[in-house]
Image 1 (cartoon, rainbow, N blue to C red):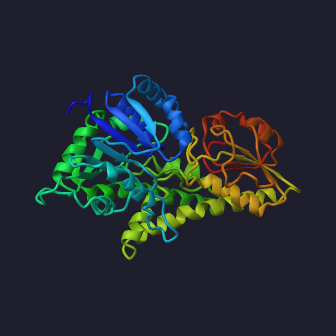
Image 2 (cartoon, helix red, strand yellow):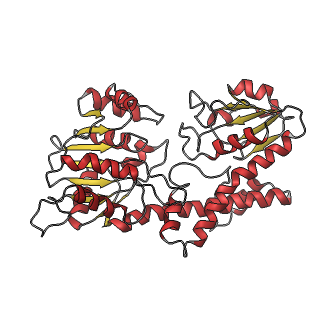
Image 3 (cartoon, rainbow, N blue to C red):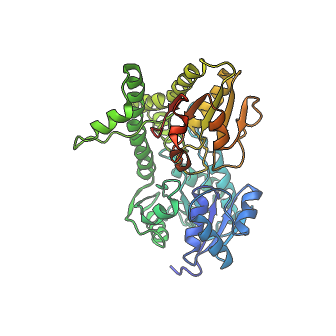
Length: 415
């Protein structure tokens, strides 16, 4: 493969697509990022990043300045396509594939045969095969496998396995699972990721690769559900759950995770449902873990309401909206859910919301009469009750002794 002339189109310039485009472009590959949002396209073409991710800005600016990375609203011709679009779930918890189908509709007219199409988006088993079938439905002059006498399009799945806040490090160092609809598709995808990935590249079939990503996140979800259930039990029994877990983890074969206000982000909060929808009669433990974690925000709201009930027209400091520490990603964030419910159930209260990593409230909170977006100092000075929802470093560094008399709901164990 001649890296200097190899061209890749990355469909979707979000939290996974843009880092993937930037890391490929930094290795002298000609990359065109495609997005439906004109603001994202404009930002990338200026060498800017439209969201917060450490180190990404340098990669984007460098690749754009060298001419290796550009962005477009239109899907171009390329030798390889990486699809990194959202895969939300529907009301019945099955996957909504509209973004994948839209990506395919942009790619199909550009194909001549010989191209590599990789689905990076997390998806249920069979989705990569459906993507390939849809491409052939749109282009019946092509084929997914040799032997039909038609030009072949090579389709594979390579799920991302990175942690927001460490994407540019883990994208390079983590092992990758690569599943092809054919062995040749898997090998071609492996060759592309070998350009930048220093971890082990493990090839398999597409359905197994899809399931592997779901299993990884479901494993974490089940373990988080255990910790969250412990926190509810400990509260009822008058036990400090943080001390309990610290002590239990001294056992050489025990490693209990930390509880929180729920589970957020596009992966752990979503992926287990794809397994449940694929095998609803068998996925009992996975379903219960999801239900346990989805119920946790409601429990946090009850704790906050109990403390706020001691005040007339209480002021409640709500610390954090992101789904994890030190990032601006609010996707599926339980902190947002808690804030919404507090606004609805404590209509006489004023919620002083602090999120240092965003510049404005999300649409779901913007316009609520009793929600005020404010600074940390102002929120803490006025608060009758403090609700800690995210363990941002700036919250950890607060002088807690100044607020010793203010009741706190601490979902992160930092107060």
